[in-house]
Length: 143
Image 1: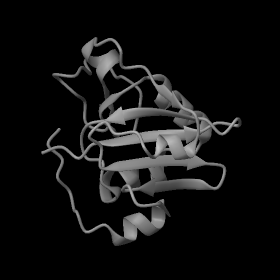
Image 2: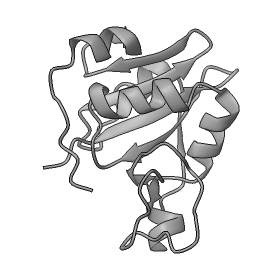
Image 3: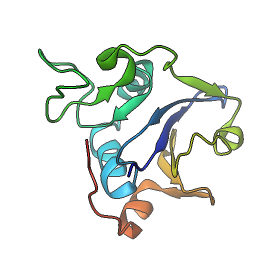
Image 4: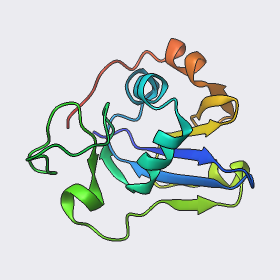
């Protein structure tokens, strides 16, 4: 069973650029990765530029031999780069309110703003640290 999420970044004009992530979207996994490895807005922009994800990991680089069918531990797997799929580019919502209404079967909406990372489970935004502290999901990684 997957735990789908959207990962977004608020732009200066208040629009939100976002991607879909299929696996492990709960705060105690994906939230921790975003908090610990994706603090820099430039790195988040690089993440979003690679499009939709199968799953997020510590790095967005692609070491030799890394593919969708043969992933290297510690490296994110992207549908476009690693599987050759099309129509997986980042999308843009008009603003934060519109972003939080997008439904791709996702359970979580992550959002990087000038104030830091936030997450919603469809009922308002929490700081990422608050969500991580209250998440009792544990690890479910099937990737």
